[in-house]
Length: 116
Image 1: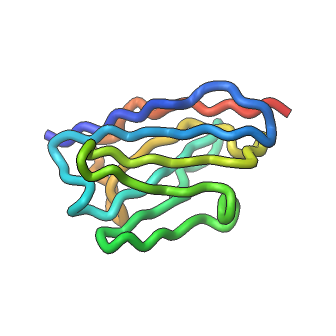
Image 2: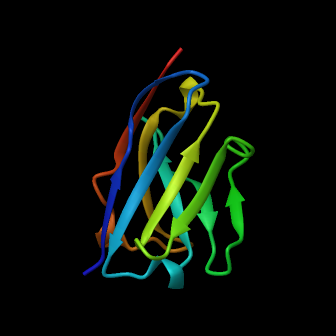
């Protein structure tokens, strides 16, 4: 069974930084393309960062240049470094496989709140 546990969220001031972690079990992050998604209140979940098996990264335009996705193969963990945070980055952040998320493996997510 695949389990994805996100952590690292919290409250930060606009312009600040935060690093999210996604600890995976039942799946090898080195052998899957992984992504970070986010969902703000009243909005659909959106994919903001992707890391392919080969190490290629891709970002939504809204976070390009500010967010960095990475992984630690030894820890089977995916990270999202978020810099220059904006109030519009506030959301619940999740990780999952891309391009087709594992439906039954969405975690609880981690809440990111950005104060202006």
